[in-house]
Image (cartoon, rainbow, N blue to C red; front, side):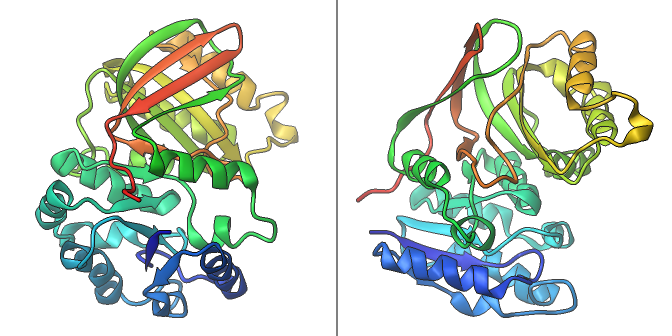
Length: 304
């Protein structure tokens, strides 16, 4: 079974029972969960002060074993405060000779994209301790896709997608849309050419999602990609003022503005059901008649 090392670089885990439930489930499955003391740590809205949370990340440089899964307790906000102090080169060197399997999403996207920008360090965009493994009901789909991604050198994700027919290949990258957009103009946004960009978000109205995607378009980032995959956009329901402007309308408009295929419908993001995707891996996206598959390779895996 696996060794799981917890970190808490973002928000305080307000749902302490969920985090403890996640540990109990992982340990019952035979996994060893270490660094559990970060779960209860708190400084106002954060999971500890900036020094403590930064230390979680920089300690990974000298973590004494490989073949370890690194997992944030939760997202929230806080990683952006730490970007200037992260030992990016030290982490990149560590990953070259003894890669950790680093997995998370949401606010953690800032760290993941920073690693990808620094030295093409591949991390996994997927479940975290409290929200996923600690959910009241552990989702079988999420759990199965998590272990499939971390244990297989080549794997495929399939779904009933929507969009134009396409067959493209490139580097998969992305994650949380708001965090990605916040990195534009910084050293921590990867300069990916001919990539496949996948994005998701939560608590963002359709017009805000559109505005962020248009910002990527106006910055010339989307035109340098081969495709855009849209995951879930949780809690984005329109209101009466929108008069029919919803996510579907936003996506339809986006397709009129972009020259690249936009494929939607992937179970990816802040939902009970989410796939796990290796950011920085090689990907092939094939879509035809609502059948979509994304094949991934070139990422680190657990060595049992």
